[in-house]
Image 1 (tube, one colour):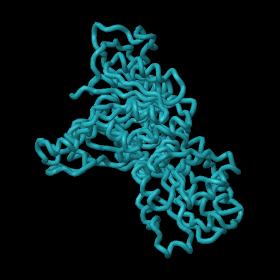
Image 2 (cartoon, one colour):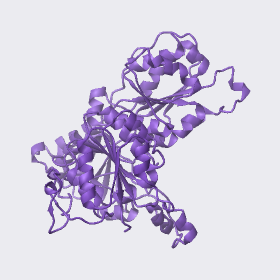
Image 3 (tube, helix red, strand yellow):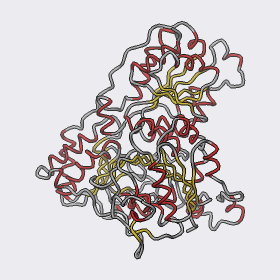
Image 4 (cartoon, helix red, strand yellow):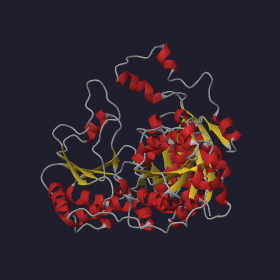
Amino acid sequence: MNGAETVLRTLLNNGVDVCFANPGTSEMQFVAALDRHPAMRGVLCLFEGVATGAADGYARMTGRPAATLLHLGPGLANGLANLHNARRARTPVVNVVGDHARSHKPLDSPLESDIDAAATTVSHWVRRPITSADIGPDTAAAVAAALSAGGPDVADRSRTGTSGAISTLIMAADLSWGESTPPAPRLPAPPLRSVAPADVEAAAALVAGPEPVALLIDGAGLSERGLRAAARIRKATGTAAFCPTWPARLRRGTGVPAIQPLGYRAEAVNQQLAGIKHLILVGAREPVASFAYPGRPGLLTPPGTRVHRFVPDAGFDVVGALMELAEVVAPDVVESDVLASDGVGADALGAGGVELGAVAGLPAAQGASPSLVNEPLCTGNWARFIGSLLPEEAIVVDESITEGMNTLAPATADSAPHDVLGLTGLAIGQGIPVAAGAAIACPERPVVCLQADGSALYTISGLWTQARENLDVTTVILNNRSYAILRAELDRVGGNQAGPAASALFDLSRPDIDFTAVATGMGVPATRATSTTELAEQFTAALATPGPHLIEAILQPS
């Protein structure tokens, strides 16, 4: 048995059975070992950012890590952006990064780099086995470290959400091909920590007190169990509940208590939290602006609002804490008493139209059964049609950015029950890869990827992986032919109105990008929609046909 096989078998012993790979010479021993161990599913990705993003999506849906197999420092560097997103989402990921043989490193060959330094920027845990005897124990430790902020067992994490970290194991090529000791056994995942009873009592005193209070909930608290506990608290005390703008995973839809995402802009957050005297953080960070702006504060909590850290943001039982708080302040409110929706669902799509179910055999809408008015697609209408047609138990991967910022949440609040995976770390290019990973994690569930056009191009090769693995993903490219969010950012940083040179850097036309041609060339059937009727018909047809599909939705400028 060589060292690479020890790594692979130890990963399997520790519950890691999917590897998203873009290997090179230093990883060939690992690749060869796949034939001897078919329990490990190897998924080829054409770019390392697809591999790391897919591992993120897989872990968000299963609660346990996938592995990535990356080639030396440059391969790891190509995957850093989506590892950053995974880190911010507290997703467990185990990177296996090959390195030169130890005798070769002093030669400073072309691909030599400081892998450890690059890995440290996104990893909670980084280690190199020094001898063959270290390989098995270090691999098992990598998995345990990825789950270091996780729950007591895989089943519970998959039910309540993830809270993990990034581990990076760096394997010298000579250790990979050399003789090794046997694989290491499974290490137990550390249990979640409970919130102290005194902290529960302090939070209960605030929410039952005379001053306005809001909860800011993140992590596993955004599972259905967590949201139902928050709804009990709200019904008994009037305490508002918010979540981050783009949480890692959020349960939504009919029958699920609604929670209001914080706005992206400071002005929106100030309005949402106006009058709140106490903001209680439940597995969440204090809200801050994504960027600094001249003359504007970085903290988004309004002056005069006190912030209380009820549940720290890693390693604690967020759901348990919410349920304990609900038992104290709402003992007489049971789950059947809480409202499943706060009435923030999709608006009517227009008067005088026909029902969605009457158009080209489309199914009836899941939510408000809106009527369909055929009009050009634009920022204001596409999300309502997606929300009305969203299938039950869909996984929605949201990288709609500008186009969905103010429209997607209300449009899907009354959709069939579903999960939303958001752009937690704001490093664009995660949508298509995360959708691939989620589809591998949950092959029985439809995946809908709502993808901005500009960021789609960062990891567009993920469509090839979707086609190769025959994944049930429907990708909707929201094509406004621009980096639309940057126009607003230019004004907010004091750049004033964009002239021709500045405007050219926001413009994705000249030439227009043909996403249907790109998708077809990668093996994914594709169509183009310019009107609401076309989008509804094409979206329904894609959902009804197994395998990947892409719809290029051409949006008229606002």
